[in-house]
Length: 238
Image (cartoon, rainbow, N blue to C red; front, top):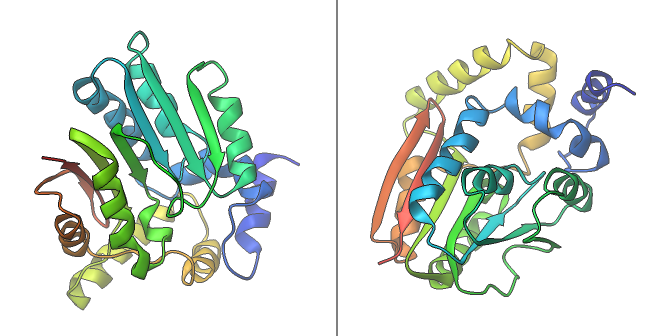
């Protein structure tokens, strides 16, 4: 079955969204039609890592999906000694990640709930569109674990879909995103996917994400990317 046909099947399914075998096959193309500037965000993470990573670094990618973040960081640091650990609870997604990163010798992937993993001291941790899939009640604890895992001066990159606290603003920017998605999907496909995600993906506002980071003891945060209802934050450990 061709990728486009698989995507049509996925977008016609009822029930909650799942990162299963079908989604893993289409993920790289599908995510670029769902998240504006996805390719540019990945490139930017790689470029930033060149400035953030010392020699002999450890990088965690939380919710690694198909390993895009790891590949981007590795491509930006081809001769620097960096160890990569990608974590995800979806075995089909991890299979794709292993294929994508097969030319990287110092990478390990683990199938695990990222809230339960036993982390080692790290220089950089990335959660690209992952926290929004973690139950709200568990997010602060996870961010505290991330902060405590980082070495002094270590960095955390958080990318998320965001909501707006004012209903007028929220409706406006959701509409902007939906109009953008109509370049790639039918209105029915957009509606069906939105329904499938409503119990699975629970985004917070940009302000709430920053508040949680500060509660987790990240004193220094900067928004380094924003497009309508998507944002990326760099948080540094003191």
